[in-house]
Length: 234
Image (cartoon, rainbow, N blue to C red; front, side):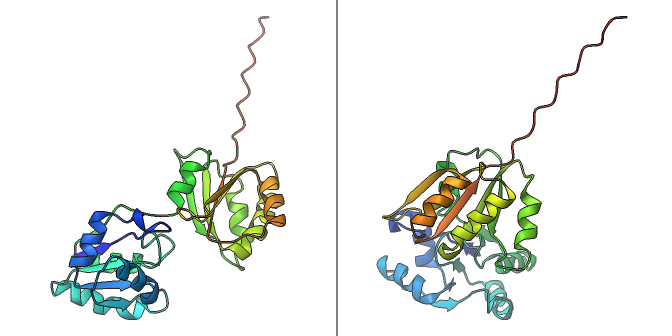
Protein backbone atom coordinates (compact mmCIF):
# COMPACT_ATOMS: atom_id res chain seq x y z
CA UNK A 1 0.00 0.00 0.00
CA UNK A 2 1.18 3.52 -0.83
CA UNK A 3 -0.20 6.26 1.40
CA UNK A 4 -0.06 9.98 0.58
CA UNK A 5 -0.21 11.59 4.00
CA UNK A 6 -1.05 15.29 4.49
CA UNK A 7 0.94 17.05 7.21
CA UNK A 8 0.18 20.38 8.91
CA UNK A 9 0.84 23.60 7.01
CA UNK A 10 1.00 25.43 10.33
CA UNK A 11 -0.59 24.32 13.58
CA UNK A 12 0.56 20.78 14.46
CA UNK A 13 -2.91 20.03 15.82
CA UNK A 14 -4.15 19.94 12.23
CA UNK A 15 -2.73 16.46 11.68
CA UNK A 16 -5.34 13.71 11.77
CA UNK A 17 -5.44 10.65 14.02
CA UNK A 18 -5.43 8.46 10.93
CA UNK A 19 -2.30 10.18 9.58
CA UNK A 20 -0.51 9.55 12.87
CA UNK A 21 -1.50 5.89 12.82
CA UNK A 22 -0.30 5.39 9.25
CA UNK A 23 3.03 7.09 9.96
CA UNK A 24 3.54 4.94 13.06
CA UNK A 25 2.71 1.67 11.30
CA UNK A 26 4.30 2.07 7.84
CA UNK A 27 7.57 0.40 6.83
CA UNK A 28 9.05 3.50 5.22
CA UNK A 29 8.38 7.23 5.09
CA UNK A 30 9.32 9.14 1.93
CA UNK A 31 10.04 12.72 3.00
CA UNK A 32 10.59 15.78 0.83
CA UNK A 33 13.10 17.00 3.43
CA UNK A 34 14.02 14.49 6.13
CA UNK A 35 15.12 17.30 8.46
CA UNK A 36 11.75 19.06 8.29
CA UNK A 37 9.75 15.85 8.57
CA UNK A 38 12.08 14.63 11.30
CA UNK A 39 10.94 17.47 13.54
CA UNK A 40 7.30 16.54 12.99
CA UNK A 41 7.92 12.86 13.65
CA UNK A 42 9.92 13.65 16.77
CA UNK A 43 7.09 15.85 18.10
CA UNK A 44 4.66 12.91 17.83
CA UNK A 45 7.24 10.32 18.92
CA UNK A 46 7.17 8.48 15.59
CA UNK A 47 10.26 6.41 14.88
CA UNK A 48 10.12 4.95 11.39
CA UNK A 49 12.81 4.76 8.68
CA UNK A 50 12.87 7.78 6.36
CA UNK A 51 14.13 8.21 2.82
CA UNK A 52 14.66 11.52 1.06
CA UNK A 53 12.24 11.91 -1.84
CA UNK A 54 12.07 15.24 -3.68
CA UNK A 55 11.82 16.73 -7.17
CA UNK A 56 15.57 16.38 -7.78
CA UNK A 57 15.75 12.61 -7.14
CA UNK A 58 12.23 11.23 -7.60
CA UNK A 59 12.86 9.98 -11.14
CA UNK A 60 15.96 8.08 -9.96
CA UNK A 61 14.34 6.53 -6.87
CA UNK A 62 10.76 5.79 -7.95
CA UNK A 63 11.55 2.38 -9.50
CA UNK A 64 13.20 1.23 -6.25
CA UNK A 65 10.21 2.43 -4.24
CA UNK A 66 7.77 0.56 -6.48
CA UNK A 67 9.83 -2.61 -6.07
CA UNK A 68 9.57 -2.31 -2.29
CA UNK A 69 5.82 -1.76 -2.55
CA UNK A 70 5.42 -4.82 -4.78
CA UNK A 71 7.40 -6.80 -2.22
CA UNK A 72 4.68 -6.07 0.33
CA UNK A 73 5.97 -3.01 2.17
CA UNK A 74 3.74 -0.12 3.20
CA UNK A 75 5.15 3.29 2.24
CA UNK A 76 3.94 6.72 3.34
CA UNK A 77 4.75 9.88 1.38
CA UNK A 78 4.91 13.25 3.15
CA UNK A 79 5.94 16.69 1.92
CA UNK A 80 7.30 19.53 4.03
CA UNK A 81 3.73 20.70 4.62
CA UNK A 82 0.30 20.01 3.17
CA UNK A 83 -0.85 17.25 0.84
CA UNK A 84 1.80 15.48 -1.30
CA UNK A 85 1.25 16.02 -5.01
CA UNK A 86 -0.20 19.52 -4.60
CA UNK A 87 2.76 21.63 -5.84
CA UNK A 88 4.96 19.07 -4.05
CA UNK A 89 6.46 15.65 -4.91
CA UNK A 90 4.00 12.76 -4.85
CA UNK A 91 2.39 12.52 -8.29
CA UNK A 92 5.13 10.45 -9.91
CA UNK A 93 5.30 7.72 -7.26
CA UNK A 94 1.49 7.56 -7.08
CA UNK A 95 1.27 7.12 -10.85
CA UNK A 96 3.98 4.49 -11.08
CA UNK A 97 2.66 2.57 -8.08
CA UNK A 98 -0.86 2.45 -9.51
CA UNK A 99 0.53 1.34 -12.90
CA UNK A 100 2.33 -1.49 -11.10
CA UNK A 101 -0.90 -2.66 -9.48
CA UNK A 102 -0.13 -1.25 -6.02
CA UNK A 103 -3.05 0.20 -4.08
CA UNK A 104 -2.70 3.98 -3.61
CA UNK A 105 -4.54 5.84 -0.86
CA UNK A 106 -4.50 9.59 -0.22
CA UNK A 107 -5.63 10.56 3.27
CA UNK A 108 -7.85 13.64 3.67
CA UNK A 109 -6.09 16.42 5.52
CA UNK A 110 -4.23 19.68 5.53
CA UNK A 111 -3.57 21.74 2.41
CA UNK A 112 -3.05 25.48 2.18
CA UNK A 113 -5.31 26.47 -0.69
CA UNK A 114 -8.62 25.08 0.61
CA UNK A 115 -8.87 27.24 3.77
CA UNK A 116 -7.53 30.22 1.80
CA UNK A 117 -10.17 29.76 -0.90
CA UNK A 118 -13.05 29.19 1.50
CA UNK A 119 -12.15 32.17 3.71
CA UNK A 120 -11.46 34.51 0.78
CA UNK A 121 -15.05 35.61 0.38
CA UNK A 122 -14.82 34.86 -3.34
CA UNK A 123 -16.93 32.20 -5.09
CA UNK A 124 -15.57 28.74 -4.32
CA UNK A 125 -18.18 26.51 -5.95
CA UNK A 126 -16.02 26.49 -9.10
CA UNK A 127 -12.35 27.38 -9.16
CA UNK A 128 -9.14 26.98 -11.14
CA UNK A 129 -6.00 25.86 -9.28
CA UNK A 130 -2.82 27.22 -10.88
CA UNK A 131 -0.30 26.66 -8.07
CA UNK A 132 3.02 28.40 -8.73
CA UNK A 133 3.30 30.42 -11.93
CA UNK A 134 6.46 29.99 -14.00
CA UNK A 135 9.14 32.20 -12.47
CA UNK A 136 10.33 33.64 -15.78
CA UNK A 137 9.70 32.01 -19.15
CA UNK A 138 6.01 31.54 -19.85
CA UNK A 139 4.77 33.55 -16.85
CA UNK A 140 3.25 36.45 -18.79
CA UNK A 141 1.84 34.10 -21.42
CA UNK A 142 0.07 32.02 -18.80
CA UNK A 143 -1.44 35.09 -17.14
CA UNK A 144 -2.80 36.30 -20.47
CA UNK A 145 -4.36 32.88 -21.01
CA UNK A 146 -6.13 33.27 -17.66
CA UNK A 147 -7.37 36.80 -18.33
CA UNK A 148 -10.81 35.57 -19.47
CA UNK A 149 -11.13 32.79 -16.86
CA UNK A 150 -14.52 33.21 -15.17
CA UNK A 151 -13.80 30.85 -12.27
CA UNK A 152 -11.98 31.92 -9.12
CA UNK A 153 -8.23 31.38 -9.61
CA UNK A 154 -5.87 30.02 -6.94
CA UNK A 155 -2.15 30.83 -6.98
CA UNK A 156 0.75 29.93 -4.71
CA UNK A 157 3.50 32.53 -4.46
CA UNK A 158 6.74 33.07 -2.58
CA UNK A 159 7.01 36.23 -0.45
CA UNK A 160 9.67 37.90 -2.60
CA UNK A 161 7.45 37.64 -5.70
CA UNK A 162 4.12 38.71 -4.17
CA UNK A 163 4.44 42.38 -5.19
CA UNK A 164 5.56 41.39 -8.70
CA UNK A 165 2.60 39.02 -9.00
CA UNK A 166 0.12 41.68 -7.92
CA UNK A 167 1.65 44.17 -10.38
CA UNK A 168 1.22 41.65 -13.17
CA UNK A 169 -2.35 40.87 -12.07
CA UNK A 170 -3.12 44.60 -12.26
CA UNK A 171 -1.71 44.76 -15.80
CA UNK A 172 -3.42 41.61 -17.10
CA UNK A 173 -6.59 41.23 -15.01
CA UNK A 174 -7.16 44.90 -14.17
CA UNK A 175 -6.70 46.85 -10.95
CA UNK A 176 -10.33 46.42 -9.90
CA UNK A 177 -10.34 42.61 -10.03
CA UNK A 178 -11.24 41.27 -6.52
CA UNK A 179 -8.50 39.43 -4.69
CA UNK A 180 -7.72 37.85 -1.31
CA UNK A 181 -4.07 37.53 -0.35
CA UNK A 182 -3.73 34.91 2.38
CA UNK A 183 -0.50 34.35 4.26
CA UNK A 184 0.71 31.99 6.96
CA UNK A 185 -2.35 29.72 6.82
CA UNK A 186 -2.93 27.98 10.19
CA UNK A 187 0.00 29.78 11.82
CA UNK A 188 0.24 32.40 14.57
CA UNK A 189 0.47 35.32 12.12
CA UNK A 190 -2.26 34.14 9.74
CA UNK A 191 -3.69 37.08 7.79
CA UNK A 192 -6.04 37.67 4.86
CA UNK A 193 -5.99 40.94 2.89
CA UNK A 194 -9.20 41.31 0.88
CA UNK A 195 -10.06 43.96 -1.67
CA UNK A 196 -9.10 44.85 -5.22
CA UNK A 197 -5.77 44.01 -6.83
CA UNK A 198 -4.83 47.70 -6.54
CA UNK A 199 -5.63 47.75 -2.81
CA UNK A 200 -3.66 44.57 -2.14
CA UNK A 201 -0.71 45.92 -4.13
CA UNK A 202 -0.77 49.16 -2.12
CA UNK A 203 -0.78 47.17 1.13
CA UNK A 204 2.17 44.92 0.28
CA UNK A 205 4.12 47.79 -1.25
CA UNK A 206 4.18 49.38 2.22
CA UNK A 207 4.16 46.14 4.27
CA UNK A 208 6.95 43.72 3.40
CA UNK A 209 5.48 40.33 2.42
CA UNK A 210 6.58 37.63 4.83
CA UNK A 211 5.67 33.98 5.15
CA UNK A 212 3.93 31.63 2.73
CA UNK A 213 1.22 32.99 0.44
CA UNK A 214 -1.91 31.81 -1.32
CA UNK A 215 -3.46 34.41 -3.63
CA UNK A 216 -7.12 34.02 -4.58
CA UNK A 217 -8.21 36.05 -7.62
CA UNK A 218 -11.82 36.54 -8.62
CA UNK A 219 -12.78 35.34 -12.08
CA UNK A 220 -13.71 37.67 -14.90
CA UNK A 221 -17.33 38.69 -14.70
CA UNK A 222 -19.39 37.45 -17.59
CA UNK A 223 -21.22 40.22 -19.41
CA UNK A 224 -24.98 39.76 -19.24
CA UNK A 225 -26.57 39.00 -22.55
CA UNK A 226 -28.53 41.84 -24.08
CA UNK A 227 -32.25 41.16 -24.05
CA UNK A 228 -33.74 40.56 -27.44
CA UNK A 229 -35.63 43.53 -28.84
CA UNK A 230 -39.29 42.78 -29.45
CA UNK A 231 -40.25 42.79 -33.08
CA UNK A 232 -42.27 45.77 -34.15
CA UNK A 233 -45.59 45.00 -35.68
CA UNK A 234 -45.96 46.29 -39.18
